[in-house]
Amino acid sequence: MTHRDQLKRLLLERSVRFGNFMLASGASSTYYIDARPTTMSAEGQMLVGQVGFDMVRESGLEPTHIGGLTMGADPISYAIAHRSHLEGQPIDGFSVRKEAKHYGTGNRIEGGLDLSSRCLVIEDTLTTGKSTLAAIEALREHGVTLVGVLALVDRSENAKELFGEIGLPLLSIFSATELLEKT
Image (cartoon, rainbow, N blue to C red; front, side, top):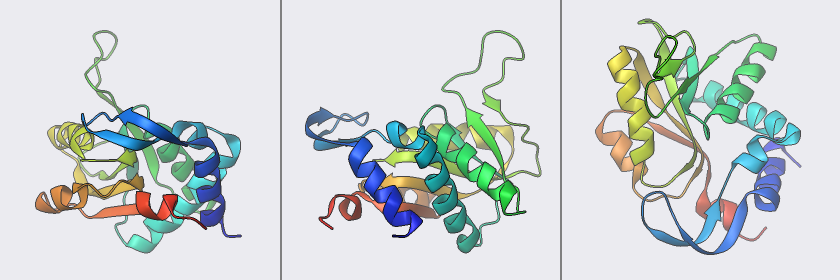
């Protein structure tokens, strides 16, 4: 069983629920994917780090930094960053808050980004892409270069087209259809 197959199994065991759910987009759905029980587990960290790093490396996007909106993107970003270091091809992590802190440095973005940073934006479960756009907007205001978006699971609800319109390729580890298909 490949690391990707193991990650799929873990997502199905820990993160997929069936029923009637309201999504952050406002749409209703008969299934819900909360990736955090998977991505925050020890096994999930190893798997998402390896599978995610392999996908990033094969994409040719060459980011220097990887991250997204806290909290869904954080465990994925940090797992990939960790794996990248082990592979001798370091990609640093970052986090984007929904709004700037009102104390300390007042940062909205943490992770040492500068104007030379090439950022790949991470999303755990991607539906319409509107919440990911908040991270993209903050990063653009920060002055970094954006190279693309990586989703653990893409629900395939037009986010690819949305990101394409702003010049960002979308990489998906799984589509929701693939994740939910019977194996």
